[in-house]
Length: 326
Image 1 (cartoon, helix red, strand yellow):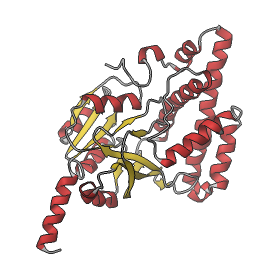
Image 2 (tube, rainbow, N blue to C red):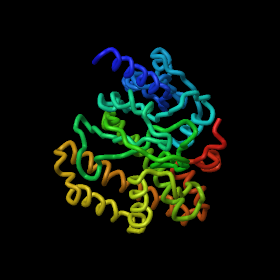
Image 3 (cartoon, one colour):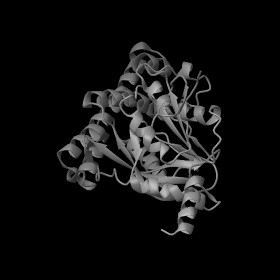
Image 4 (cartoon, rainbow, N blue to C red):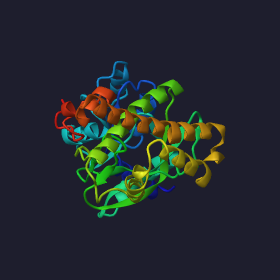
């Protein structure tokens, strides 16, 4: 590379670093160093929004140079929107990264020049999210590629108000795609993984009950989602949710494993499809049924049943937008 090209590349890389990377955390001491070191390769600032971790997540983040804020946890949507509104972000671009994720080398290289060369009408960027489970990358079963909107111009996007399966919504501009990927690789034990998904199942049950009983908790976004998210949301709302409880997880599992060739992911991959595609969705359905049974047996309101059975107090949360967050 000659001197002129070297200077030009350096200038583009400096421009691209006008980026704040937001990481939401709770007890992520195992992952936070890997995540922050990856984020610092592309961002001018790393902002960790911690929900009062009881381990040394916050201190590790500060030691690595991240700015750390703390806010009471309600759900992902609440926490992300709180960060966007309250964190005094001063960069041109914003990126969302989960604590157990990091960027591959192709994405890091493309980010070095992408934002400085981006057309003015592009407001957000889709990035492929690749999942690794117990050391095995999941390539089949409809799990790859997973295009997610993770990078946007400051003020041009927000997180849709949902209890689960939330996406960034682009308020203006078009979406473009970047080469490379975000790698999702959680290093915790399988016991930890199942406990996390048990909590996820409660929140997804709230979303399903919200839709069924018109509780008005989750917004229905018509515009601003990326195409893949729109298609999946349509299938979930118009097809999957209308199938019988307890039966639909088996149909979905069959689709993932045989129609979308999930069996090609090997034994570890099949374990992932079994747990995430069947067990998890059966657990969601069981929680929905448990809440509905509580309504009948106790003659209580659906919101009271959600609080008593799932441990989610919708009144305290004041909805997924989190107006009541501290």
